[in-house]
Image (tube, rainbow, N blue to C red; front, side, top):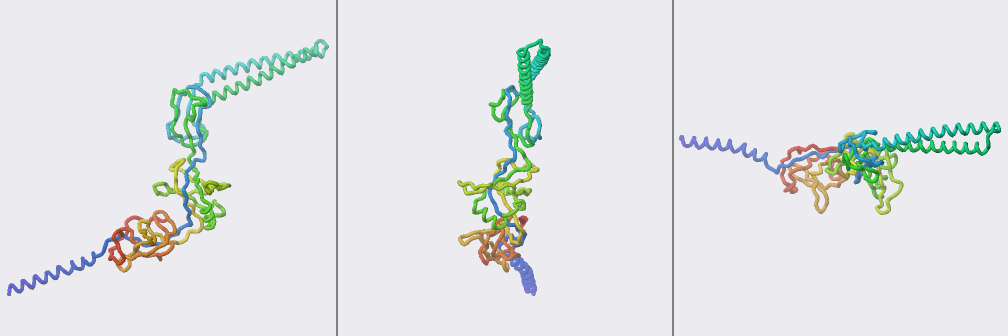
Length: 371
């Protein structure tokens, strides 16, 4: 009897333990995947091109007089304002030239004063019939020569002062300095070449070529008319978006016959100095009223010979949805057709999926970036 009771108790315990494990197994069945909802977002009409950043003003600083470089007033790569001292050339010889020219001017002015007095006396004598016309004419000629000498001496003095001013080399524009090509103690002059380059920083130009085909397509889709209404955004080579918005300010007047492209240019704010002259970027032009369109993460896209598709969760199983793409919006892809919105799109765990495979969905951890 005791043996029978023990057997019955053991059977009841086995049933009690097996039932929850069986339920747990059912709950954990299916391949683990991460999903996001296919959602509708306001997407603007966008056209993308490849462009370069250009500084509106770029100056190559050169020495305009010859002399020993006495000092370098800046550090490589620093920002500077108009009139900021950059270099100083030894001024001794140029200061001496100014003083010499000043002396020559004073001597010429003294000679002019004497010539004027002599001319006046010759005229007075001629008026009293005590002088001759020849003497008067000679005095007039000497005075004119003295005036010319004063003019030449004044010009020499002005030139000497200008050359002295050239010994202090200052920034002609506001911008950022490059690396100096000369250091203190070197002999510099007009034939030395570029001492340092200076480029403006804010705003910057974004220039990009547009093929005639793309330009006509853009015009048909709403980029014609007032170009100031077109938003211009840029994306860096690593795929990150720049946080400022620019505007188109110039369309070239002719098409390049060798490439069949027209050059467009826009202003882009650069308050933090992130844009660098010569930098290669992606340019996106946006215009028109944003339209509600379905977007999914680019990581969810799969492609085969029939084209792009995504996996969605349908009744606990994986199902294929063939889609048509309509461009990119940040980290997302715009879907023109194939999804209605609200579907659970599988982003992670698609490697071994097949249509009809049972799946266990969890939310995708990465945030979906809107356009």
